[in-house]
Length: 564
View 1 (tube, one colour):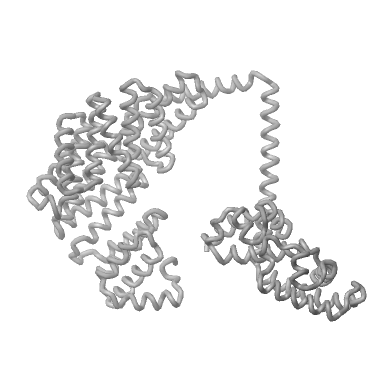
View 2: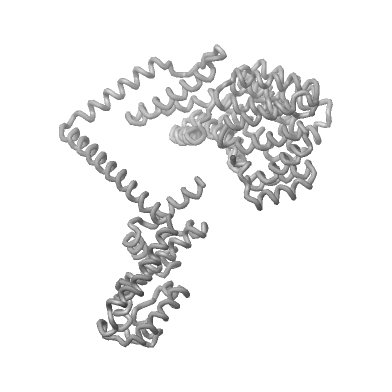
């Protein structure tokens, strides 16, 4: 529905864009990778043009672009669109499709831990590319090598594939057109040798890749080879050299937002510091590995040794809670990896024996329970805290429901505004009929004059002045403060302060709804924006009129716009 529900303006824009060539639309789509709204326009135009011309391969490419938009948010939806790519591009003889679609689908399946299905899709891509595009065939072979090496641990098979690709690229223009593919292949060979602990061959290919990346000025690959050699130096137990290399590479990995290799950098820093006997630095870096895993939920068998290290560290210093914490995390990761490889009849070999870990975990839990049970007073306090938290939680739940209801009432502005206008008219017509001018001791002509000035004051938003007082406003109206106060009380049905604050809060609500940039302001900045002298006075007035705090209102407003 995201791609079909365009406004009339959007449809006209799409219609105009169909006058562009497919190549122009393709380039515009990929030139706007950080602007999904524009990408949707270009891919819709691409699709409209393909449908108009009834071109199967162009429909396939449009579906491919849509699949990429779902890459991060909905992998199942992305796979559905990739299946459409495959359907439309079968037997078209295109150089990249459906082979590229099978590769992308395999990547999604890998992320869902469906390695067997992923390999089947890579093999389908390989078979098609061999017939339609020999260059892409070797790209697919490289993907298969990466999967065997990084995901399956089949380093010898992966090495054979990488060398096959190397022998192909070495016959090509490997410092221009094929430079990136060639260097990725070299890295794959070096990485496989590292995993096989053939450190001399690893160094040879890291140096080769380093030289090639320097010649072609590929900064990212340049530092990737430095990082890989740093890891290799850890295996050689040259820990100072390892630290030097990894510290050089780490900033580049962070700059490129490469979380996988950032995690690898921290892991090998931890190993190097451990090798130098700097235990505290080792712990710090293994904790950073854990923090990245917590963010990405992705880790391979190569980098899980930090968890046994943390378990032993906290055991040695008697920190039972952290020891239990990292035993639990390690067991979760182990279960995920076992699930990942189960369908392929592989076993993940880990440093710790899991049954022993389970026993250790149960002992820790028992020990912690005994520690907690030493004092009945402590148990009573714990129960009291739980009851208090539960009661508070229930209270907060009910309060949130109440606040949500109040927020929804505020958002129904048309009904509320009509009601307020109705009440306002009643205040101006019905109340004056009851209150004669002599009831408040002011002449009728003066009352009407001041009411007219109040109307103008409201329209021109004079209430936004932060130093406004009843005295300053009565001076502006050329009357006295007592008359002004009586008229506001009688005809606006409010005290002067309540009248001014309500005008400011109504104005704040409408502006916060209309201007997204205001919703980024601090409460203090908003207070000044809407005529209040402090965040506290703004919040108090907002709550008094609407029954919710401004911070809550802004958060709910943001959430409602995201949903819409």
